[in-house]
Amino acid sequence: MALSKPIMNLVASYLQNLYLHPIKTKSISSCVVGCAGSIASQVVAGERIKLDPIFAFGLYGLIFGGTIPHYFYELIERLFPHEATAFPLAKKLIFERLVIAPLMQAFSLYTLARFEGKNHKAASKQLHSLYLTVLEANWKWLTLFQVINLAFVPPMLRVLFMNIVGFGWAMFIASKRRQSQKKESS
Image 1 (tube, helix red, strand yellow):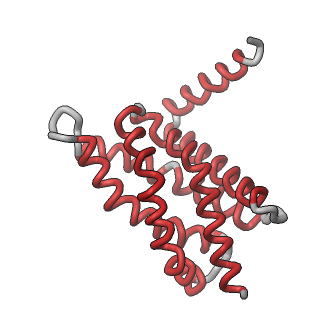
Image 2: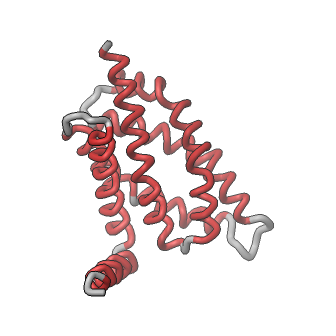
Protein backbone atom coordinates (compact mmCIF):
# COMPACT_ATOMS: atom_id res chain seq x y z
CA MET A 1 0.00 0.00 0.00
CA ALA A 2 2.86 2.39 0.81
CA LEU A 3 4.31 1.88 -2.66
CA SER A 4 1.09 2.88 -4.39
CA LYS A 5 1.24 6.54 -3.29
CA PRO A 6 4.63 7.26 -4.96
CA ILE A 7 3.49 5.41 -8.09
CA MET A 8 0.22 7.35 -8.20
CA ASN A 9 2.14 10.60 -7.68
CA LEU A 10 4.45 9.67 -10.56
CA VAL A 11 1.50 8.84 -12.83
CA ALA A 12 -0.27 12.08 -11.88
CA SER A 13 2.87 14.09 -12.52
CA TYR A 14 3.38 12.38 -15.89
CA LEU A 15 -0.23 13.04 -16.95
CA GLN A 16 -0.01 16.66 -15.83
CA ASN A 17 3.20 17.17 -17.82
CA LEU A 18 1.67 15.34 -20.77
CA TYR A 19 -1.24 17.78 -20.71
CA LEU A 20 0.87 20.92 -20.15
CA HIS A 21 3.92 20.00 -22.28
CA PRO A 22 2.88 17.14 -24.59
CA ILE A 23 5.78 17.15 -27.03
CA LYS A 24 8.48 17.67 -24.41
CA THR A 25 7.02 14.91 -22.21
CA LYS A 26 6.64 12.47 -25.11
CA SER A 27 10.16 13.24 -26.31
CA ILE A 28 11.72 12.65 -22.91
CA SER A 29 9.73 9.42 -22.52
CA SER A 30 10.93 8.27 -25.95
CA CYS A 31 14.50 9.11 -25.02
CA VAL A 32 14.34 7.11 -21.79
CA VAL A 33 12.71 4.11 -23.49
CA GLY A 34 15.21 4.19 -26.37
CA CYS A 35 18.18 4.28 -24.00
CA ALA A 36 16.71 1.52 -21.84
CA GLY A 37 16.00 -0.65 -24.90
CA SER A 38 19.54 -0.20 -26.16
CA ILE A 39 21.04 -1.05 -22.76
CA ALA A 40 18.76 -4.07 -22.34
CA SER A 41 19.67 -5.30 -25.82
CA GLN A 42 23.37 -5.15 -25.00
CA VAL A 43 22.88 -6.86 -21.63
CA VAL A 44 20.76 -9.65 -23.15
CA ALA A 45 23.38 -10.15 -25.87
CA GLY A 46 26.03 -10.49 -23.15
CA GLU A 47 28.06 -7.63 -24.55
CA ARG A 48 30.00 -4.92 -22.83
CA ILE A 49 27.86 -1.77 -22.64
CA LYS A 50 28.74 0.62 -25.47
CA LEU A 51 27.69 4.24 -25.24
CA ASP A 52 27.34 4.97 -28.98
CA PRO A 53 24.15 2.94 -29.49
CA ILE A 54 22.68 4.20 -26.20
CA PHE A 55 23.40 7.76 -27.26
CA ALA A 56 21.96 7.12 -30.74
CA PHE A 57 18.70 5.62 -29.45
CA GLY A 58 18.36 8.29 -26.77
CA LEU A 59 18.99 11.17 -29.14
CA TYR A 60 16.64 9.68 -31.73
CA GLY A 61 13.92 9.36 -29.10
CA LEU A 62 14.50 12.87 -27.79
CA ILE A 63 14.44 14.57 -31.19
CA PHE A 64 12.13 12.37 -33.27
CA GLY A 65 10.56 9.65 -31.10
CA GLY A 66 8.15 12.01 -29.36
CA THR A 67 7.58 14.66 -31.97
CA ILE A 68 6.89 12.64 -35.11
CA PRO A 69 4.38 10.26 -33.47
CA HIS A 70 2.72 13.18 -31.66
CA TYR A 71 2.00 14.94 -34.93
CA PHE A 72 1.23 11.69 -36.74
CA TYR A 73 -1.52 10.73 -34.28
CA GLU A 74 -2.98 14.23 -34.52
CA LEU A 75 -2.92 14.02 -38.33
CA ILE A 76 -4.51 10.59 -38.43
CA GLU A 77 -7.40 11.76 -36.23
CA ARG A 78 -8.02 14.69 -38.59
CA LEU A 79 -7.76 12.57 -41.75
CA PHE A 80 -10.00 9.78 -40.48
CA PRO A 81 -12.33 11.17 -37.82
CA HIS A 82 -14.35 8.50 -36.04
CA GLU A 83 -17.74 10.07 -36.69
CA ALA A 84 -17.22 11.25 -40.26
CA THR A 85 -15.73 8.22 -42.04
CA ALA A 86 -16.75 4.64 -42.58
CA PHE A 87 -14.32 2.13 -41.07
CA PRO A 88 -12.05 4.76 -39.46
CA LEU A 89 -9.95 2.19 -37.58
CA ALA A 90 -9.23 0.24 -40.77
CA LYS A 91 -8.31 3.42 -42.64
CA LYS A 92 -6.04 4.63 -39.84
CA LEU A 93 -4.36 1.24 -39.62
CA ILE A 94 -3.84 0.90 -43.37
CA PHE A 95 -2.41 4.43 -43.57
CA GLU A 96 -0.06 3.78 -40.65
CA ARG A 97 1.05 0.32 -41.81
CA LEU A 98 1.49 1.08 -45.53
CA VAL A 99 2.65 4.71 -45.50
CA ILE A 100 4.04 5.73 -42.12
CA ALA A 101 5.68 2.47 -40.98
CA PRO A 102 7.83 2.07 -44.14
CA LEU A 103 8.92 5.71 -44.03
CA MET A 104 9.67 5.66 -40.29
CA GLN A 105 11.65 2.43 -40.50
CA ALA A 106 13.88 3.82 -43.24
CA PHE A 107 14.25 7.13 -41.43
CA SER A 108 15.04 5.54 -38.06
CA LEU A 109 17.58 3.04 -39.40
CA TYR A 110 19.46 5.74 -41.30
CA THR A 111 19.26 8.31 -38.49
CA LEU A 112 20.40 5.87 -35.79
CA ALA A 113 23.46 5.00 -37.87
CA ARG A 114 24.26 8.68 -38.37
CA PHE A 115 23.81 9.40 -34.66
CA GLU A 116 26.33 6.66 -33.95
CA GLY A 117 28.84 8.59 -36.06
CA LYS A 118 28.66 6.63 -39.30
CA ASN A 119 29.08 8.52 -42.54
CA HIS A 120 26.35 8.69 -45.19
CA LYS A 121 27.74 5.76 -47.18
CA ALA A 122 27.95 3.44 -44.13
CA ALA A 123 24.51 4.51 -42.88
CA SER A 124 22.99 3.91 -46.33
CA LYS A 125 24.65 0.51 -46.55
CA GLN A 126 23.25 -0.48 -43.16
CA LEU A 127 19.81 0.83 -44.16
CA HIS A 128 19.82 -1.26 -47.32
CA SER A 129 20.97 -4.40 -45.52
CA LEU A 130 18.37 -4.16 -42.74
CA TYR A 131 15.36 -2.36 -44.18
CA LEU A 132 13.28 -5.23 -45.56
CA THR A 133 13.95 -7.49 -42.58
CA VAL A 134 13.02 -4.77 -40.11
CA LEU A 135 9.96 -3.61 -42.06
CA GLU A 136 8.67 -7.16 -42.39
CA ALA A 137 9.15 -7.70 -38.64
CA ASN A 138 7.41 -4.39 -37.97
CA TRP A 139 4.38 -5.45 -40.00
CA LYS A 140 4.40 -8.91 -38.44
CA TRP A 141 4.86 -7.98 -34.77
CA LEU A 142 3.66 -4.40 -34.34
CA THR A 143 0.39 -4.48 -36.30
CA LEU A 144 -1.58 -5.96 -33.39
CA PHE A 145 -0.18 -3.30 -31.05
CA GLN A 146 -1.17 -0.56 -33.50
CA VAL A 147 -4.70 -1.99 -33.67
CA ILE A 148 -4.91 -1.90 -29.87
CA ASN A 149 -3.38 1.58 -29.81
CA LEU A 150 -5.70 3.06 -32.42
CA ALA A 151 -8.84 1.28 -31.18
CA PHE A 152 -8.57 1.54 -27.40
CA VAL A 153 -5.88 4.00 -26.28
CA PRO A 154 -6.87 7.67 -25.89
CA PRO A 155 -5.00 9.85 -28.43
CA MET A 156 -3.09 11.66 -25.67
CA LEU A 157 -1.57 8.34 -24.48
CA ARG A 158 -0.85 6.71 -27.85
CA VAL A 159 2.80 7.76 -27.98
CA LEU A 160 3.33 6.45 -24.44
CA PHE A 161 1.69 3.13 -25.33
CA MET A 162 3.89 2.73 -28.39
CA ASN A 163 6.93 3.78 -26.31
CA ILE A 164 6.21 0.90 -23.95
CA VAL A 165 5.92 -1.44 -26.94
CA GLY A 166 8.96 0.36 -28.36
CA PHE A 167 11.14 -0.91 -25.53
CA GLY A 168 11.00 -4.39 -27.03
CA TRP A 169 11.20 -2.96 -30.54
CA ALA A 170 14.34 -0.99 -29.63
CA MET A 171 15.89 -4.22 -28.37
CA PHE A 172 14.99 -5.92 -31.67
CA ILE A 173 16.38 -3.07 -33.82
CA ALA A 174 19.55 -2.89 -31.74
CA SER A 175 20.13 -6.63 -32.10
CA LYS A 176 19.55 -6.55 -35.88
CA ARG A 177 21.91 -3.59 -36.24
CA ARG A 178 24.54 -5.37 -34.12
CA GLN A 179 24.25 -8.51 -36.29
CA SER A 180 24.64 -6.40 -39.43
CA GLN A 181 27.72 -4.66 -38.03
CA LYS A 182 29.30 -8.00 -37.15
CA LYS A 183 28.74 -9.23 -40.71
CA GLU A 184 30.30 -6.06 -42.14
CA SER A 185 33.38 -6.33 -39.94
CA SER A 186 33.91 -10.04 -40.75
